[in-house]
Image 1 (cartoon, rainbow, N blue to C red):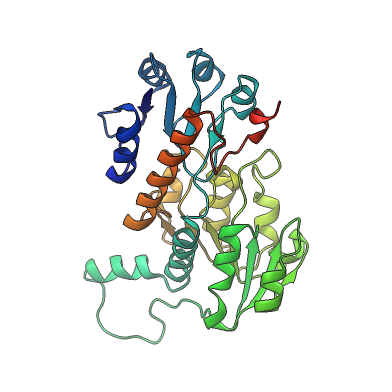
Image 2: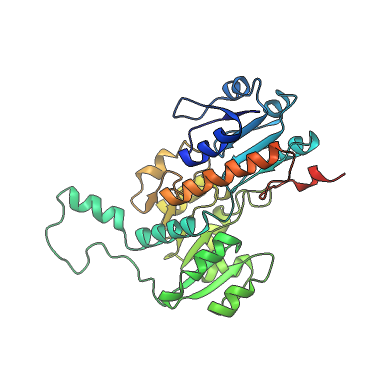
Length: 322
């Protein structure tokens, strides 16, 4: 069979695909337009796509015999799952393998924002450092503070567990009780409002859904402490970016560490000008090991799907029901 890969992924994954099928990989190191994806799908049986590709109804229905869509990401809000399911096309993702890597990035952002690492680096490189001073580049302590975790799925749980060494009080907000966090950290499940009001550091780990769009907006930002730090490694539109800029400029909160943006890859020019932010290029899963594991998983999902078997990480298993 023939597979279209919308952008080059680690070679190990491509090698797996080549052993079983014929593949065509986008030769350009950039996001393809919808028109280019549709053109690439011509004559193909499988589509291996990225979170940056919008696989909507038009794309899915442009290829009448599409048999499998493998998404190289955990989230799959970039794919019209309803249309794929209606056409009996399995869709898979790559969960699990990037859990710790993403949790580590959230911690890197937390430390960097709280201790003003990027700001201090620029200050020093610009030749402004004239020696130690008692009021120079004051940040905040992390040990013994309150950590708020919004969403305790795989990544949120891993993120919270990494707080063990800092003797933190952990609050979490989720639909379900997280027994692991409660037993290992004595974490407390609280209302969304209480988490916002009491946490020193707030990290977002929920998927982008209709219910989580602009989950953090002006109202929520005003509930936070003036010393609060907001971390987002989930999806950009969960945070109202305009309200966040306003909050940071007016010192409603201390700082923010972001790996994702509302209108990615576009980023608010105002946000880029602020010193109390750390901005990363959506690279939370960007370690050599993790990206390779994602490639292997995406490839293996594709192989199974093209055989007519249910992929291990199928997000719409109902397509296999009679």
